[in-house]
Image (cartoon, rainbow, N blue to C red; front, side, top):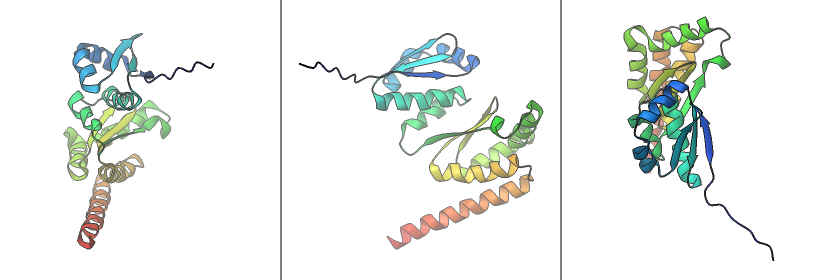
Amino acid sequence: MLNITIRLYAMEHLLIPYKRAAMLKDKALAALEKRLKCSIKVVNGNEVVIEGSPYDEYNAKNVIQAFGRGFEMDATYKLLSEEYFFEQINLKDVFHTKDQILRVKARIIGKEGKAKEYIESVSGVQLAIFGSTVSMIGKIDEIQVAKTALKVLIEGGMHKTAYRVMENERKKMRMEEYGRHDSG
C-alpha cells in the first residue's frame, strides 16, 4: 500500500533589506502573525520565513514584500483586499549607474515631495521610493494611471508632460467606467 502525505502548509522565503527586516522584528511579530494568519520569522538578518496555508502565505508575502520596499505596515494591509495590488519598477533594469538612479528618484519625488504627492493624488496609488525601486499599492486602474506618469519621468520627460499624460489616462479610464455603468 502506498502511503501518501499531503502537506497543507508550505513555506515561503523572502529576502528584504536588512534595515526593513530590523524594523519588522521591532514591530510586534505576534500581531503581524495574527493579522496575516501565518508563522513569520526573521532569520539571518534579512530573510523572512513565512509558513501557513498557500493563500495566507501569498498574502503575507505581498504584505512583507511591500513593507520591505518602504511602505508603512498600515498601507501594506490594503493588499489583503482582492481589490489592491503591489507593483514595483526596479530602476536598475533601466539605468546603469547610481547617479542616474538617484536623478530619476529625485524627479519622481519632486521638490519637497510635490511630484510624488501629485501622482498619488491623481492616480489614487500610494508610492514608495526605496533603494533602486519605485513601488505602488493601488487598484489595477490606479496603478496603470500612475505608471503613465512614471514612464514619462523615467524616460526624461518634463513633469508637466507626465502630469498631462496621467490626467488624460485618468479621464479616459473614468469615461470607460462611466460607459460600462451607463450601459448596464
